[in-house]
Length: 200
Image: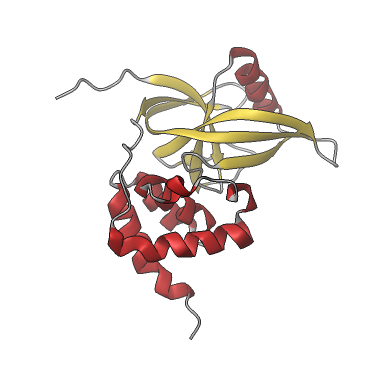
């Protein structure tokens, strides 16, 4: 059995959303602790951890984060119409938080175990309908994925994460799909969820 990867320390950004590997996340940054975090990440070329908030809020006192999150790497900066700092980040590896500590400024830092990427796996034939549904979702809800190669739709991991990203799911459902490590099982869960969105 392979030795586990060493723990990595990351600043954590608890949010009321789930970030999936490969997804894009747009944020407006205004709290000093997160402005400092963004500056440090940009200067050092490092990422930060995005975790779903289980208890608390995005602003104010440190919130309780979910144990499994996703590394976010900043890819773009801009100024918003309100004069705030806007960033776009790209979802990378998933991780499990082993320990956390709160810095004096309220920033949460965590020692995390990075998860390996899911290996490429062809979508089983019985999930072909999910590929068709995702194409429709991309047309209406995910224009940033319109240029994705057709081969991406044939990868079980990519298909599952994109469907979980675009479907109007509850936060708890999104988190559960993030935590699954079997891409085909994720497709099973999504297939079972779909009847909820069918018109009567």
